[in-house]
Image (cartoon, rainbow, N blue to C red):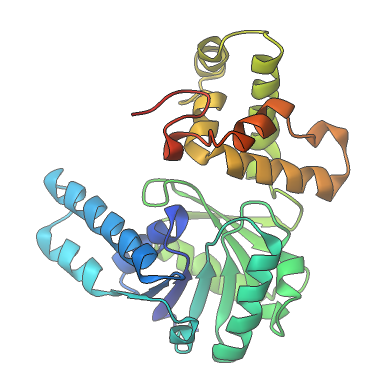
Length: 283
């Protein structure tokens, strides 16, 4: 399969990054969100990243121009009709994702592959919303997409070998390192990472140590580049809570129970860097 055009659903934190690395790899990109403001915001974030790269001499003006020319922003899902691969990157709500894929299944050509950037929702269940389970796969990019090398490639129960091969090759062309995993809640990355973050929140709630001390222990003792509470703020506490909820429901094991303090922070609107306050404060 010769992939030329990639559709990206969602122009937010992950979606605009996926659009950027796709265009940088030479693909035509259709970036879609629900309204024009969100689309423009995503494209502006791509432009700012390219401008910074030019100023750091990591990209030329010609490369920046070429990347931006390959990206078309749209609000109509129907614009995905000619895409060879569609990558969904909306927020972590199973029903919202299923509804989108049901519509895409009617719109896209028969050979189009569907990939979800979900960080934890089982791929087999999402694929069941379509009539192309063999052409459905998980493609979990890490945040920030332009900088992080890993892509978890998640096979659903019906995902074909050919779909896996094409998506693995596509990730490599984007400059990523694809790692194949099987379809369980949280896959590998978040099944390991989020319980650690959740346990760090328990340590804070129970007064075991201050936020700074907890992060320092993990940075200095385990050689992590960022402490778990700092990382939670970067990911978004609402996203962390969503993932823990999926793990808890998916496995039915109390070890995945979201920390009450994490729930309380989300209820208060303290979601991390994106709101200016999480476990830390941001300007």
